[in-house]
Length: 153
Image 1: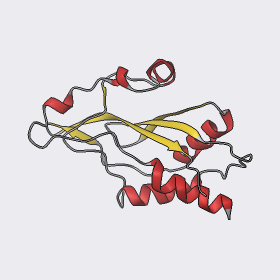
Image 2: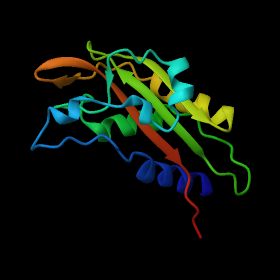
Image 3: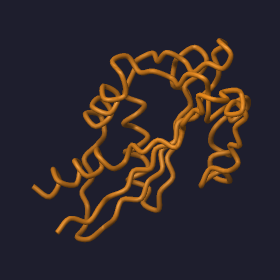
Image 4: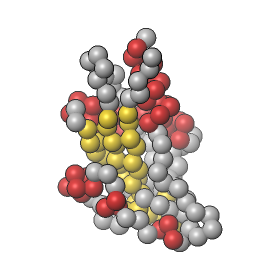
């Protein structure tokens, strides 16, 4: 029961998107500062961040929408055996390429098992996304998902 509550907690609390577009001035949001990401010093060594954006006129779309992606992701993620009161604090990063495929995936966490499970959850999804676009042109888009556990009473 605790695992089910934990997974539901991650499901409803982990996919908080920091990427938003400003309808009034979409061009302003095309300039992204990837170096402002929480784990920039780590991910710059693991991911190819050339020409990557975190804001676009149109965001990448998973076939069936983000709820379909979340469902598929949590079907593929390995269930973690958590110790009593152990917290999950994992930050997942992946790039949706101009072609719509996910090529670069990395996760940052204190617990290496949590990071590996988060990465494998995305790598097991072999779907082609509709790529992000700026001024009608496809761009490389960096997704950032914080995966954190929440304490339940």
